[in-house]
Length: 123
Image (cartoon, rainbow, N blue to C red; front, top):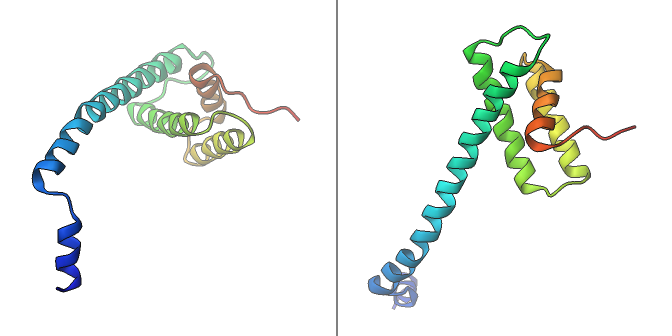
C-alpha cells in the first residue's frame, strides 16, 4: 500500500463528511449574514457621517467609496483587536495610508471616532 492509499483510508467516508458539513453550514450562514449586515450598517454610517460633516467640500462618489473602504479596514482591526496600543497603531496606520491616497485625515479620524468610538491616544 502506498502513501496515497493509506491517506485515503484515514479520511472519513462521504456520509460522515456530509453530516459534518451540514452541521457547520447553519452556523456559517448565520455568521456570514451577520457580517453582511454589519458591513451594510457601517456603509450607511459612513454615508451619514460624511453628509453631516461641515466645513468639508462634498466628496465625490469615488471618494465616498474610498472612505467606505477605509472604514471597512478599520472595522476589521476593531473586530480583531479589543483595544490597546496595537489597535491605536493600526488605526493610525490606516488613517495615514488613506490620507496619502488623497482622503482628508480629519474626516477619517472623525469617522473612526463616530463609528468605532476610537480616538488617537494622547501624548
